[in-house]
Length: 468
Image (tube, rainbow, N blue to C red):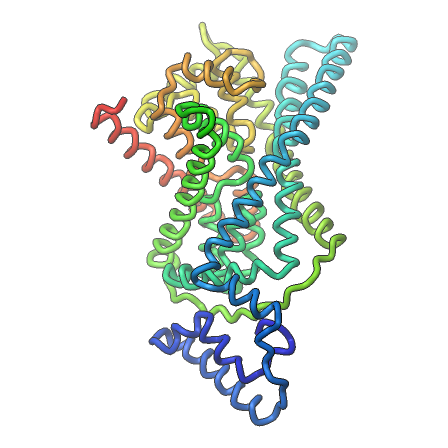
């Protein structure tokens, strides 16, 4: 029902517009029961209720005809998603730089205090160059995008548009024996996969909720976007004339996102035919009326319930990662640091999937937070002993190329970044939402296996064909 004054004699028509059109074409017994319930409700309403005639000229009806149309509905969804991404990425650049400048300036003050107190160098390294610096990276990279993305997402939710998105994609998810509401959790995952996992509570079926939880990591979160965009700009946009660079990077990034969505559908189908067998439940979705957003509620839900909640978990996980990373980079065994020895040990596996040992190790050490993967990689390449980031992409390109990067290395790094294991914040959310270590382990293994498999096939195929 699209609004409260919609006449009851159009209920069957509305049902036919949703997945109930499939019920009459032969579906499960549960679906047919739901269809019969609605048909009986319509019959009773026709006898007992006097309703005004439908006003087809109402603006909300005309808007629904467009937003839920098979011709215009999908392009509008992609356009809005792209607009949200663009606003988030562009809008987060300056605040991220300002926060990073402030936090790293305070790091210098901390250093002065440690020196004045006569603290040993190792203590300064662990607490300032390790712990504090990792927290500074995570906060400066995560906070601005989330503070932009989540309010935009909540705004679409308050406007009443998101249920239309679930309405449009329910049929595609039904083919995978999943639930149309999963698209809403995926949209939340673009901001943060941990928040996407928590948002799976909106799915009523326990089986379909688990499918949504286990596959949420296949959509890239804002912690992975900076890495993807930087590498794409260097190796994709940089290979073309400057006037085509932005368009090429945009198309490539959109293709990566669509690949992640394709993996979501494929793995959802696989799960629903193996460990989570079952039929898709009927999604009885009442389309709410369009309404004016309540700005106060939007800000509270997006900032308190989502942004700060996720940031707190990420900070808790990133702190020990910063300490561990500094120790590995500054404790030497023989002629090399522990970090260098670990990278050497990982080199054969990394080479098989088109990476190098330092890249794979950076992803492993970045498990607590994807935001620190590139700083760890630069620290490893340049042997600085602490995480760093370069100001210009040209400098980043020079470092990568001088350490043997080719187009294959760049492509597989982006593919692995897209598909690899969830961060510890997302895994912790998965454990709390599923209540099971078994499902949490599966949430880790599914993208890990997918990432290694895809990168292995791409790397070996490119080498077999002599493309590198």
